[in-house]
Amino acid sequence: MHDFCFTIPYGLILIGGGIVGYVKKGSITSLAGGGVAGLLLILAGYLSLKAFKKRKNSYFALLLETVCAAVLTWVMGQQYLQTSKIMPAGIVAGISIPIFILLVKRRRLSQRLPPGSLGVPIIGQSIGLLRSMKANTAEEWLLKRIRKYGPISKLTLFGKPTVFIHGQAANKFVFTTDSSTISNSQPKSLRAILGDRCILELSGEDHKRVRNALMSFLKPESLKEYVGKIDEEVRQHLEMHWHGKQQVTVLPLMKTLTFNIISSLLFGVERGIGRDRLVGDFQEMIEGIWSIPINLPFTRYNRSLKASARVQKQLKDLIQKKRVELEQKSASPHQDLITCLLSIHNNENEEVVTEREIMHNVMLVMVAGHDTSSVLITFLIRLFANYPAIHAAVLQEQEEIAKSKSAGEFLTWEDLAKMKYTWKVAMETLRFFPPVFGGFRTAIKDIDYGGYLIPRGWQIFWVTSMTHMDDSIFPEPSKFDPSRFENPTSIPPYCFVPFGGGPRICPGYDFAKIETLVAIHYLVTRFNWKLLCSDNFFSRDPTPVPTKGLPIQLSSRFQQGSYASAS
Ligand code: HEM
Image 1 (tube, helix red, strand yellow):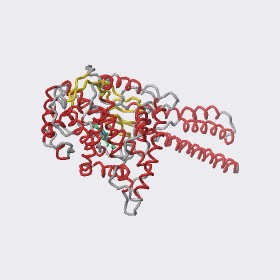
Image 2 (cartoon, helix red, strand yellow; image 1 turned 45 degrees about the horizontal axis):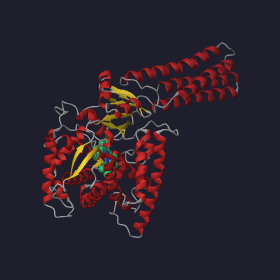
Image 3 (cartoon, helix red, strand yellow; image 1 turned 90 degrees about the horizontal axis):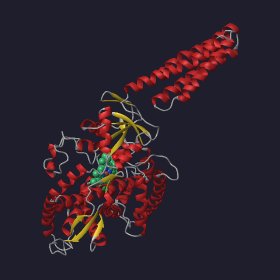
Image 4 (cartoon, helix red, strand yellow; image 1 turned 180 degrees about the vertical axis):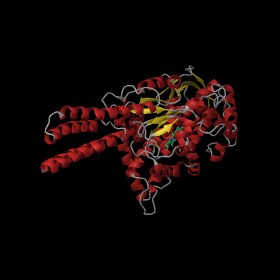
């Protein structure tokens, strides 16, 4: 604002000078010169103000202003006052006034910013955070910041200035503040790889429209119909990859399982070369989602961008194929997520979700869905090996259900409702090892938070485990205790947040619950296992990865004569 306040009177003086020149000397050139000079200066001030409001670099406007002010003051001095003495004064005023204003502006801004350093531009603290995530010391890394700078601090992550906030109030702020104040735009790497029309990037009405469309497939009433299909995928998977094996590595297999479930249920892509190609490209694409957005041939980001282009090409062909099948009525709207999205029309009979939105959201659902549930199931398997009493209680619950089924009968929605203890164990596992480390929002306007300014355009960074491991919320947080979830209302709101919260709470909650319970049912009733790597370590990449992907030694319970479930 100050720039504009300065340039308006300064510009008006120049215009006035032109008018004086015209009146005194009758010179039309004076009038034109003064007018153009004044208007140029006002324009420069306006540009500077706009750049400042958008928090963009205002150096260009500042330079323009300085040059205009200096040169024009000199020209005017020469022309109207017939003296060259005005020249040095003009240059000094022209240069020093805008610089002074800029410094004052910067100083005011920085006084209100949270403490902390922004570090090297673009890179900032990204490498430090990513390294600590790999070493599984990210929580300590953040606690160190909190000790040094307090509960709110600034840093640069993945190319953008960022404010890190944490705790119950911070979670509530992130999850419930309306989309005209904070939006959900993601780090540049994620946006470039998953696409700008994925639901994470949308806000307001657009977000609601696409989210409602996704929910029409992911809501429990629809998913009930698919429990049998998920059951079939789990059994096929165990038959192919687990039965008859003495040793398996859990995490990659769970990723294969969840990928296959999503491929079949959400995309209607059957097993075969097409699915295998897609899985390879997806894995490569995911690796760069949280990376420094430097697009050079050797960077992770570059490899992921290329993989993303290959995935998009395959999805485009798939959507085209499904559109034709729907037109020819050889596919039904409820067949899978893609046919469901293609079939939603508004009152004017137009498709509600565009093809580009379908493509970007299908990629997001695959990433959001398969990398998260696979981690949950993997950590449950590790946990059962470490806590025999919990394993025994889960087994008892699952065997009760298995006994009520005839050979080959699929699990049903009603069976899943009986797996209450198993789900409590899963919730406690999510408290300990949340698959999603945290997330980002972007300030749409300047926000006053906790006595500090979060400037427009900056990222806001929240971290899941900060409340999960807070002993004032979860007493003895390092104790694994599923009974915490016996009475969900005893947990304060916005404190248990593995699925986020508010209007953006994970829409895949029920899908994740179904696949986890079905997988655990068959795993515990069919197999016993021992850990081959018992260090209990994991690194984050960005989802948790146990050492060597969790190799286990496997034995079939069926062979030991105690297996009582459907085959
Ligand atoms: C254990 C499994 C899962 C966990 C822990 C999890 C966690 C999360 C979290 C923390 C968010 C971000 C919420 C926010 O930013 O406020 C999220 C969003 C999302 N998740 Fe999940 N998720 C899981 C499974 C799934 C599955 C299976 C699907 C799909 C089938 C899915 C689809 C999505 C989508 C589309 C979003 C974006 C929602 C929006 O922006 O409105 N997730 N999830």
